[in-house]
Image 1: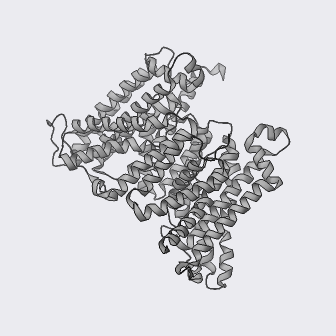
Image 2: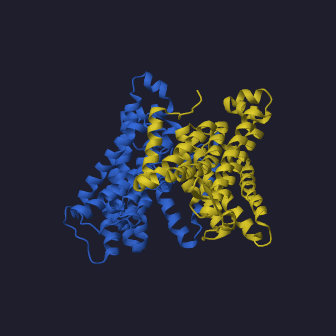
Image 3: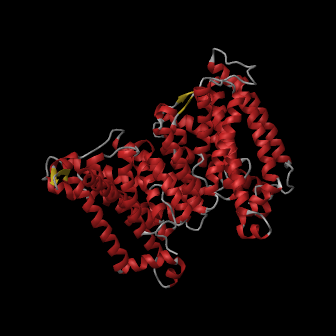
Length: 333
Length: 291
């Protein structure tokens, strides 16, 4: 059940091998795939960062947030506001401001939310995220209302990589590698967090709050820190998402978007470290193709979710893991 | 004075719709400890079915009979609930509550598109009903009679539900199950059946709410989701699982919304959610929470 391998802090041989293969595939994508495909993968990587952040709460702390759209949207809107009001063009500027902005917002909302667990936590995170959504929608003279705010392609690496005239090309090569690099950094940082003593304390809180408190873990404070870190990761993803989309609208603050982040993680399996990443990439493909193939894509997604909950509650990664275990030790099954 | 009266009536109108939605949400949570995210879609389903049924016969029947046909929406939503609970929710009662939330979220996505599939992207309505009643003058103020009808429906529904839960044998079983499911089961109550009945009753109320609001606002895609979010605010303020709370919450939200639309339209929703957050902060279980 535990997402951690037997030797904490170390990757198992299987995980190391898988990570190397996955990294090689991801590096090769722009070289072999069409720009459209590359951009689809790029969206997937962005969502994977958000899913990683979200899973620090669900998988490791045992809190189901239904309001993570707030932090994703905060990251996106901070970048868009910096373009509109201050004329910033540097991606690094956006990333720093977007991540800090979402972390601050998560810190504020977290003060209220982490006092509760279970269903009340879910509803409270949902309600607070909807405050942001309704403000983005109604204060149209600041946020552009339903039209949203346009964000032109930014310059990368402190202005040294200016956007080229072919936007598609820029996004599919330079920006893709930029996102990939930040994705790898995020994975490594999150891996270190969940395998640190802090991460272990979160898992203790998840498994038994009372016992965790008894051995000296400051439950509420740890939950708050986890909430802020989770919000910061999701905000980073939101900021990276904006140049891809070119536009930010209140839709990404609306609660179905939070539901989508939940979906990534459940699809991949929230009891594993890699599951959310897998889930985000898989969901993104599913949605891209379901949308192209039928207007009833919500129906497809809904059926997939219902079937997942009924038959594969461990998600994709959990199911693969269980299969691998069964293959390795056939005598025990 | 005139504005005050109109605003009060409008608030009561909102409150009665909100109560019809929120009471089911609260009832289901109280009995089964499940927050049904698809509840708003059952409300929308009630609206669509009522609009569709009335649309079929609008020219051939006398308008008074059309009012009776509003009940078709409530019945359809109840039937949907009676099928969905045993089929999709029953396998999950022993699992962690995240899965129950996810299941109802999946159901929300499915129902949303099923309605689009069945009735297309265009709104349906049956304004013949609201037109038939015209307007009436109350203390020098003209007000549409249909809105008064909705207020009465909400009030009657609240009284009936109260009598049902607190004055019938079934109500006793319902409350016993909600207090202690295992003990109730040990005493011979068929908990599975109570669960289906509670869920069906909740859906019935939601379907009724959808049906009566339909002649005014129409049956539109997305109405379920909007209603759900407001119903969350209502039950959070009133206290999840409490019917009195749902009523009080609906009145509070109804009045705040009416005030909001008049005086602070931009931040109306934000104010509602903030009220919910403040209530949750001060009294985590809501104003009318049971111990």
